Image 1: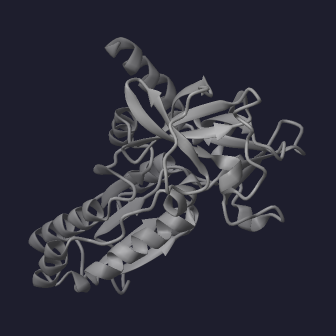
Image 2: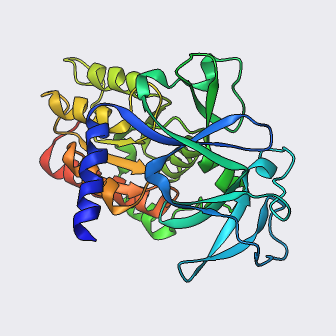
Length: 318
């Protein structure tokens, strides 16, 4: 089992070094093709006929299933997006079981379709298309260049349906005040609006200066500008998502760590893909740390620790 796990890491790490994503495409009740990163998927199963109802839950939650001796909540993605629900009781349908930020969820879909590899350069931000929507985080196309594949902002969907912890423990906020973290600057980058909002909220609670970008190209340009002679400040910490259109977080990390002016800045990869394989990949591209998304206390802890180091060694200016 260990050998298979390491083989999986090795195979998919090759994608990380080439700015590519392997995705599973699937259909919902609108017959539109959607995509999800394979590295988030634990297993795809036919929808069980017995699903335990969860009283007073969100309407998009159809219930819970027994998966590998654990109860897993199943969310009807079509219902969550305001479409006609999947008729799992009468039709054959499937559940994509995924790990997000250390928790396991099932996503009910009409049918899985196929596996595809796509360069992040060929995955667009929905803001540049007429097909953008509140739940769409990226867009790519079939080989014909016409048939779209929509990549959903699963983090936003989970936030609305399951809920996300937003508050930092008061002891961490008080620690930040004692160490005067408001004198230092943090850069963050994430294409998900829900994730950016969470990062901004966490950093606001700490009263630390921050600049948050929606793509890696903008973030890299800001970093290089901050490293020039005469710049007003230097960033003490970089927090980066992994899955981003144009340039993914692994490629962004490599470019930062290969730049002599930026390499010393502590860089944390912050992702909902929280399995051990991604931690190994993060280390292999030069990231200093890896933390799962939607855990604001962990964000606060890494910010406080890094600013403390920066104050001790003078690695960045206030």
